[in-house]
Picture 1 (cartoon, rainbow, N blue to C red):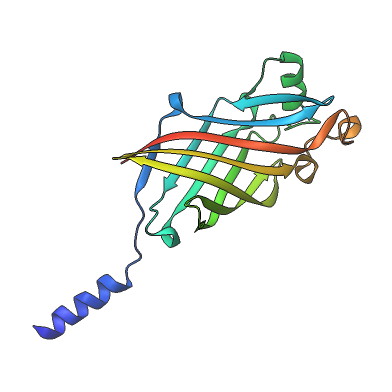
Picture 2 (cartoon, one colour; picture 1 turned 90 degrees about the vertical axis):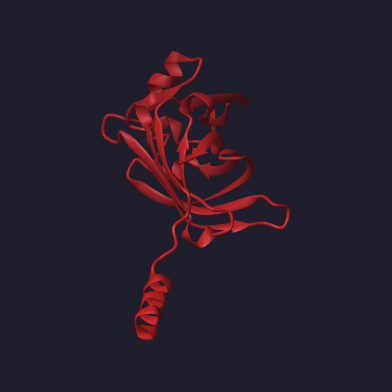
Length: 183
């Protein structure tokens, strides 16, 4: 009997831990970006995206987030700009209908915020990305806000006449404001 208990304990100890699963409330969440365009802020959002979140602040090793973004769902207050962003010199949404963000590891910083080391794929090009974020909990609900900066040209966004840093800056700030419920 003692051998069975020891064997069972070893099996359970060898099983990978699992972080809590979270379901995003899309109606209360926002995934957007901002960039200087002719030295003025230009902001847009992605209307369609899905997040698969396994996160436990007490178990960052087993936490993981993967987000799939429909590039053709980009929207701003400028239909002409949106058409260009979705087109061949921008996201090329017809050829690359999705972008993907996937975490590698998380760190909790001294101030209580977090840092996610991740990879971002846009137009079939994958680059490392660091996302700094804050997270608050209210029972089984969580609110996350975060920002990351990237160089749009590293992903091939802005080709031809749009490759120069004017009128559209190379640096883009990605913003996330997400509400989720623990499943």
